[in-house]
Image (cartoon, rainbow, N blue to C red):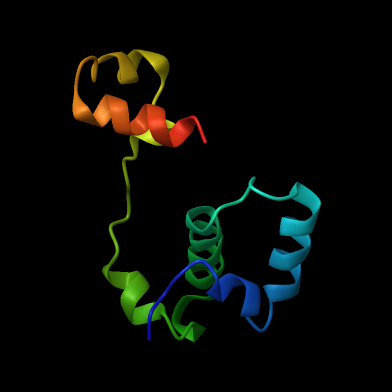
Length: 92
């Protein structure tokens, strides 16, 4: 089994809601990474009832991603490859 964003669209209980969200947002707004995050939220909320529970239980409780950093935190990356990668990603 492989957990990926497109699984959200075929998820039995919430797949229709994910598809409706994509239609409402329009093309290019919600990428596969965002779908994966939403799917993980749903599956984590299911707890032990989720087929993905053993995998989800192994994931870190906190995740730090520069995509969500404040401008002051991003300034610390000045001149680094990570700064360039974040700029490319956020420019999409």
